[in-house]
Amino acid sequence: MNPTRLPFPFPVVTWTGAAVRLLDQTRLPRELGFLDCCTIAELGAAIRALVVRGAPAIGIAAGYGLALSWRLGREAGEDPPRLADRLARDHDALAATRPTAVNLFWALRRVRGAAAAALAAGADPARVGEALLAEARAVHDEDVAMGRAIGQAGQALLPPAGSVLTHCNAGALATGGYGTALGIVYAAWQAGKRIAVFADETRPLLQGARLTAWELQNQGVPVTVLADSAAATLLRQGRVDAVVTGADRITAGGDVANKVGTYPLAVLARRHGVPFYVAAPSSTVDLETARGEDIMIEARDPEEVHGFGGLRTTPQGVAAFNPAFDVTPAELVTAIVTERGVLRPPYGQSLAIP
Ligand code: MRU
Image 1 (tube, rainbow, N blue to C red):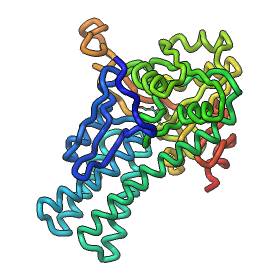
Image 2: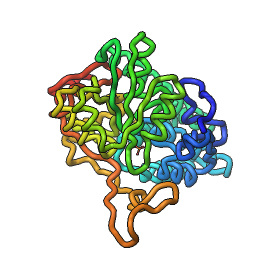
Image 3: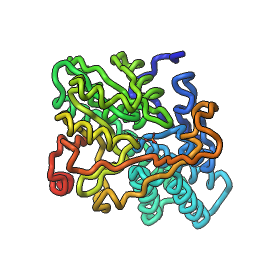
């Protein structure tokens, strides 16, 4: 049932030299397998299907995708103008995969910018390809480093022993391999703190039950899975020291888009006097978007709500509502932990400081 222990940081996304290799998160926890994406169409389909998911991880995968795009063009013998056209097309195709996590657009802009800079400097196609790959690798390496820094800053918020409630998966699997919300838990354990995790199962796609539970077990951290609707009981019983989640986009004012079901947790945490922390790298902060209402929330296929694993659970003919994310207003967020440290309200000021 539980596949082999993975090296840490996890190999969530890897560049093979000819493909973007993804740890296939749709198959966990049943089996540990990888999917090699050899075309942009394959990579785009994998991002949409959540083979790779989590805001930082999809940005990293898309960054390597641009390196793949250039390589495919060179293999097809294209001249520089056609290579540039292909890169623009593939950039747009990857940007159209998922709308909410800003890391995707941030990584694409950054990696494409490296190609533009190399071209402007008169680099030949081989050198432009090297520049693309170097920037994609930098995005990846920096994400792992940001995860470690978030972990260090965030673990200081936790008691020497206690428990954290989290939602979805904001761990190694969702990032370059270390994690944000779960990065805080890993750093706490390294600091000698004994932190257990309660993981919301996270309907409809069960990222908490399947992925958070799997990766914490893989790392030897005690984890208990609960139905999303049991979180209120847990908080009311005083069994949670902090709620810690990741984010897909944080606005200039500190509103937080994250997996649907995060907002009710923040409301519950406030009701029960428990701190609600959001952990995210600065690549998740979108200073160009002022308010949560301005964030595009991905609407996913209603079929995801109608059942799971091929088993239909709703009567034929009923409708289903399936927003992938919700927005937690800044006023419910106790602190935002980035690689720069623990940021406190008012977020309009603390997020704006470079
Ligand atoms: O739909 P998903 O699985 O990509 O949603 C992921 C989340 O909502 C995560 O909490 C978020 O991306 C932060 S990952 C560090």
